[in-house]
Length: 338
Image (cartoon, rainbow, N blue to C red; front, side, top):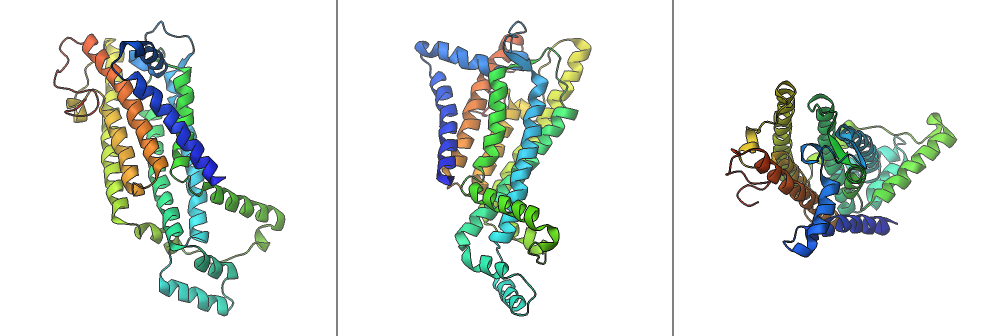
């Protein structure tokens, strides 16, 4: 079942990437495909006000991040508890103390069993996924906050219903892709724990000492590339928040003047869509933090890049058509390249 889930996720990401790649090719025969996909992807200022058929308010972006916070939070909590109980990264002294505690009747025999039976490589992969899900939760929590308190969407701002459904899919599949190799194990473990609680009750469940240090310490034992990935992640995370604040302030200015304004500051001096660039950096950080060996996470990253570059190109064209004095030195989304 795990293999089937991983396969489905990979097929889904490929199915999202290929049409966008093909539509981006500079051939006239593909212009209709490009227009069709762009019609699905347009939102906000680049969507014509008359194009209201099959659209929803852009403020529905909040639905994406509400779903993402709840879903990622559930996966994170379940995976973290699973990692603590089934994949402990205990040091040898801790293992010896567990044996001694078992012999003296101080711990449940399952504690000793789980320490011996779980391969070290598997434990490492499990804790790596906890780390990735934690970063993802930090990201979507900030995006939810921004959609509520930073952005002030115009009542006329719309997005296509297909884009809305794609967003819901993305924030369901993206967290799953970060732990897809054993999410079925986590589900079965969590279901067993809930069943045991229902049947036996809290007082009759196997009890053991909860060690906060062993609950957190394994994250400190991860490899150097995890922390480099986290640094890249937070670099993009900080810049995206700053760019979103700039865009949010422009919305306030527009309410007063009723005119769009060219954004300035931060990465806006380099590209037209720095918030998209920051998103790409954030997911690149997740790839590095994952160790770069998981194909599913690479495909997730590929979808993010292709999707955002595709939309950024249209936004860049819109800026140039809207403002005669738009800075010619700015690229669409990737500095000095595109």
